[in-house]
Image 1 (cartoon, rainbow, N blue to C red):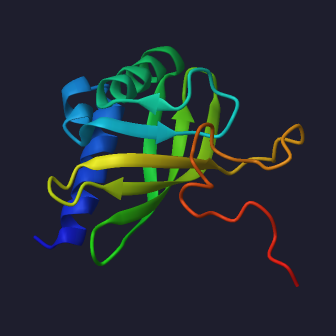
Image 2: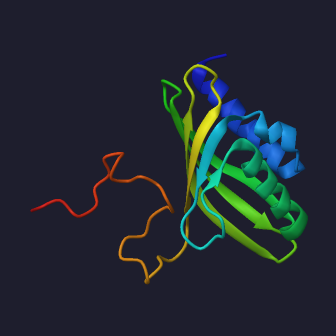
Length: 149
């Protein structure tokens, strides 16, 4: 199995664990200190640690009737990163949310170290720059203003 096939398989296993509300299956996909970043608007974000990530998704399944589908997936050739497009079905409340997630992997173990979620939704007009809560944009070299003309 190639590294890209391995990364695809770990993401698919993670989503299976989410849909099954299977704590052990989900946590086995992450390094213990993994972080899941989200846009503003959710309580207690980002989610830090494999156990926290699994516990929060189990709550969503039990409370919201959550189920997820992977719509598209692209994995880098070197297996360091992947991006997926997903739908989060909230069957108990009759809603669905669509978005993308950027995945980073530990090179030695192949486990997920980080997920950055982006929603297909209107921007938050109260925020001058819409961004993920507590994500270190400056430290990672992201542009914080438009480039000069």
